[in-house]
Image (cartoon, rainbow, N blue to C red; front, side, top):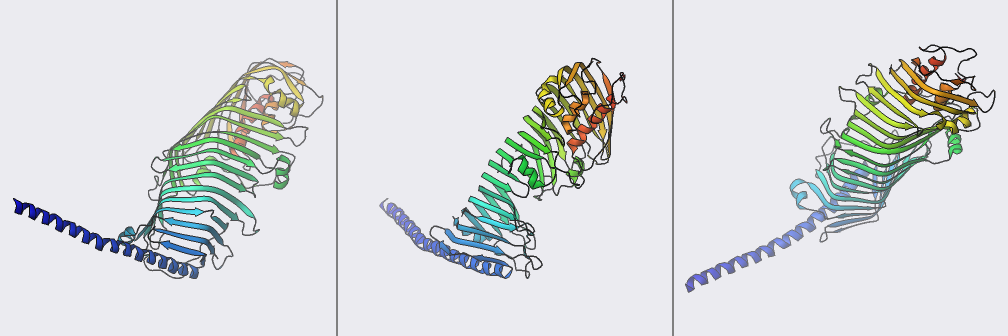
Length: 543
């Protein structure tokens, strides 16, 4: 029994001694190996910087410290400058006061030729590039890269800045300031091909962007994308002009809409990159987008218009996108839209607005064989109920359709606008319903408008005052205001034909409302059904 205990004791002692010897041998090998790897990494970085210099990419730094014990590399005063192609003066440059690479793993480097980092921190990096910048071509074909991939647990950019410069004027086109956290970032290098990348999550905060050439600012409090949750969301988005109305118009030098937009929240669920074409980051699929917004637009008609390139209808626009897109549903809730315009001749601006806007759009796509449908409900001028349905074909050659109605609209609600723009006001009047439906293509629209209203009476405040032509405002003014403004019109129903030739320099919204307006004009010009021209009644002023 004693001999057995002695043998057991001897066996344990041998195991302990073996373990101790193993530790004595392995630990130095581990640390020596790590020191060698870090030394190799440093030499590889220096060697690669020389290769980049020969290819037109100059990299300079004040110091580079590698700590194999802490597994870190810290580079200070880093500056990168790209000279651009031989036939171009375009360039790009970047400065990073401090770049810290932490938690460098050497086993993946040995076994997989991959660099793994726990975290990379970039302190106040700044990137500056020309708008026509192109990376210089490689001087010669390189051998297979030793580094096949990079994995970063956390990439943090603290107070980064990006500036885009116009290559002709050397003026600033856009500047962006932001902080950014990216998690689980992977980049794989493919010889003679573009690198592929994946990202687990990215969050941008305190985004401040300026676009001087377009005279707008944009801010975003926070935006986040998660590849695991398939969610993209952002909150507190604000787009605003850099200048007031007068200065904005003066700088533009032409007639143009000035707008401001705030989006409290926007969320895209089921957001996937590469779903419509696997492996291609330029294809996007979204199950549903939810948002609400407040949009205000202003146009000064006193500024001359300029001829511009022809606009396109929605199908052509989607087909021209440089990527594939599929959005199953876009839902808009509790939103607000207003349009204000100063007429070419007048003393004040007029304004129309839509509040409580609810909308749903299905199948926004340039890959589907099915068309898109949009349904909206809103309050017009906080009085009438506007409902409309729009269809968009899958093929550009097929017609679009619009069908809707405006009901329960009290005409005196728009008197503040009427007085300022038309020098008239509604003493009474209730639009029971205005129905409209039409088809349209890139050339013209055809359909019908039906009006039903009661107890309409309008009074002119200034005699012989010309009714001013004023886009959406004239839609209402010209609908009801005739030369016999001091008389009542109690007829309950009028029908007119929609026949409108499209102005290709105007947008889709202009096309929609002018199509309806053409039907209203036909009512008062005696071209519609149910119209009986009264003695002394003249054509609608301003038409």
